[in-house]
Length: 143
Length: 143
DNA sequence: TTGGATGCAAAAGTTTTGCACGGTT
DNA sequence: AACCGTGCAAAACTTTTGCATCCAA
Image (tube, rainbow over all chains, first blue to last red; front, side, top):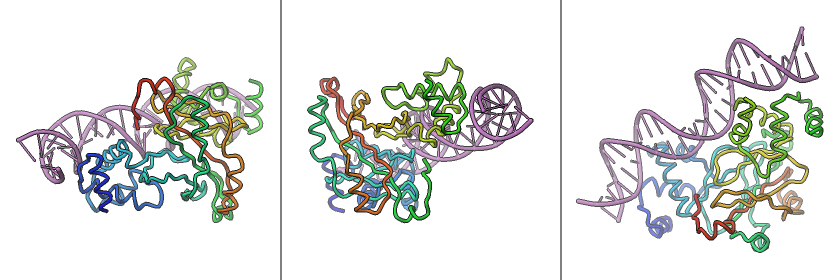
């Protein structure tokens, strides 16, 4: 929790109650959350949905959280930007999101930068499939 | 163009004027298009936006087009589902989308399936950076 | 002819914004 | 005190849906 305060200070952001709560919620989340999910978890704090969005936007600009768009979900989801970047294995049946521990793309960005002349900032990799439970139920893709 | 008709027939879909136009537009597109972009390009055909959405949804269910959500854009974009799957290099400055020709993940899905017990259906990889032109202008990420 | 396709309008869902007030530094 | 943050309401934007009509098979 001290660390979170430090992060905010380091980025020149005020430490408000809501800001701290949102960031801490994301830091402890198992998987990325949408603005609305964050809002619902913080309803008892009497926070406003606009405040959630405004803080997520700001935290994103300061690189404290990442803004993601995963397939099959039109909403934007947010995750704490840990120094170790993560990839996800998304179940198309039950929508469960499982972090993938190691990145299979080490070294690839450098090669691509050489080929294209782009300055590569990062990448996003999501893998889709069906978890063991959903394989049994033989659920079909919701597309 | 014959091929497109065949695809529709093979999936048991009626060949309507709008359906053919949308699919052909996507097939020839250099990069994925949003529903609204498709609508604007087809305005002179006096098509309705709902029709665009409904067709995209249907074509997606039949695996003729893919539904994508790229980072930095909350809209859903659609691409023709060619047998060769594609990845994209997205410029965070000018939003240009460049296809990446070869997939750096061959073999990875099998390994992951073994590790997790998931049935892997596919993956999505997008790489983000700044194109040579935007590197000069030193544009900042729009987040 | 019949079921799917379409246009139109309205609704639903998500995200942004204006403005007045309140809180942090 | 000054500036940023917040709540509230409204707007903007994206996507879906109900219903009457039209069209492809």
